[in-house]
Length: 141
Image (cartoon, rainbow, N blue to C red; front, side, top):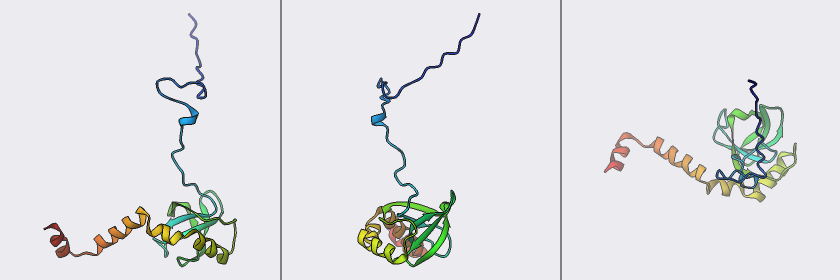
């Protein structure tokens, strides 16, 4: 007997059965992409826990960043040490620090960051790390 291999092509445009697999219902899991103008949280180096803007993409592992309002000088940074935020500044690639500062202030990045849950959690974590054993004991009562 001959074995036949059946190839079933599932067209997601036409199939909306019990699983509900339709293209109009599929959402992308990621919304924060590496792009020019994306605000990133730095996690390594001398400027750790500061915000910076991606000014240019060097290659698949590095980007040129600048943080004129947070004190981060223009430098290359690895993507592994950047955590992308949901904030985006409208700039063009390779713009000068002066115009990046202007766009940062117009977008009110500092105010949005202070009101974000991410910044609040970092602040709470820093407060918990700074209390002593006795303060922890008093909180338990």
